[in-house]
Amino acid sequence: MRFAFSTLGLPALPVEQVLQLAAEHGYHGVELRASEEEPVHPGLSAGERARVAEQFASAGITVLTVAAYAKVAAPGEDGPVLAEIEAALDLAADLGASFVRVFPGGGDLPAAEADALAERRLAAVAPLAADRGVRVLLETHDSHRAGADVARVLGTVGHRAVGAIWDVMHTWLAGEQPSSTYPALAPFLGYVQVKDIASTEDRTPLPLGKGALPLAETVEVLSRAEWDGWLCWEYEKRWYPQAEDLPGLLEAGREHLARLLSESA
Image (cartoon, rainbow, N blue to C red; front, side):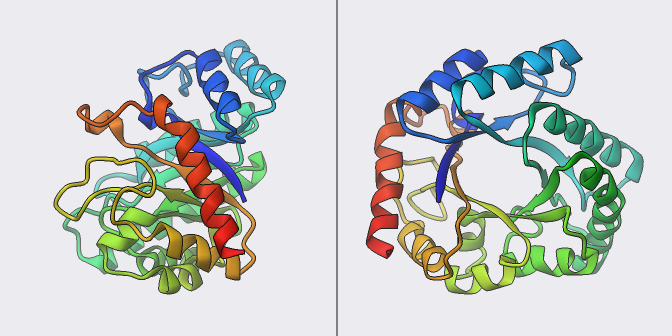
């Protein structure tokens, strides 16, 4: 398995500094948070995109994902949601990224209605993603927190260019065990987001291995299935300013993941 981290855990650092952190601490890739205040976002010109792609290639670091914020199950018109995803797909293709992350965002809608919205929108963008050589990944999150929830939608869409991100915190909050999540998501799985928190009540991000999330069980399930993909550390300091700074934790985090892999072999 390969290791990545999300820029969600960092201030809006220049690309050069992000790449330096990845290289110094043994990470193979980076999940880029693609909001407007970040250095990499859909508003970049063609020349700026080419420059970012060149920087990653020169450093030998993979742009794993363009982490967009489109909500495919949210109420409202399809047009703005589809346009947001298409812009993220164009950026991902220009950067050489494999994936675009989207959220469910179904809120309080009945499950069947939220599913139908997500299915229609994901089916609409699937051919666009395939044309660009990028996959749109629906994250286990909010209204579709469990792997079973996301699998229900993706099974209906039935397109290879649409898949899943397994966020281990949200499936745990849903009461789903890794041994159940993996079989549900395996046909669709793009990669796994790892993190750690103290409890359901206190979700302040912690160093990997210092909290309550079933990271060892998750890695064991993946290893037994001989899954050979990406583990991406999403450290949500952006929403929890009291949390420790990520750069000082990156080395120990990578070592913890490597240790879990070794123990599960």
